[in-house]
Length: 107
Image 1 (cartoon, rainbow, N blue to C red):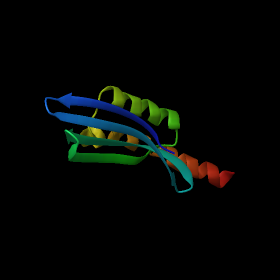
Image 2 (cartoon, helix red, strand yellow):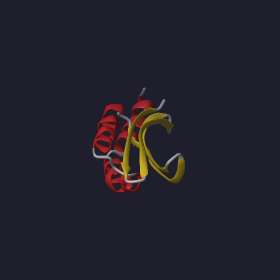
Image 3 (cartoon, rainbow, N blue to C red):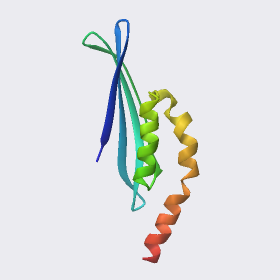
Image 4 (cartoon, rainbow, N blue to C red):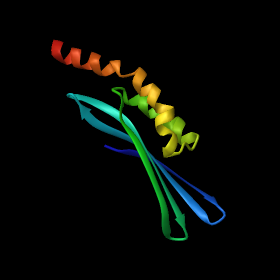
């Protein structure tokens, strides 16, 4: 499952295409949601630059990650800054995965 939001900006002769993606994967038997940001730069039809960064495991709560994704999209955050902005948030929510594993063991 991938949910994606895109935006296109330009500066004189360069077009910047951003893609903000909500990602989903399994982590220790638990569904984890993450974010990927991609930027492609074009001069005319020629791709001249590609930057991509992601954090695969942010939270077990889709709505929390989606809110974060929408903030990044609204503020046109570059892939270069994803780790700086979201890294501490992911660290703060790492406990969710421990709780999720404990719940699976109990059930």
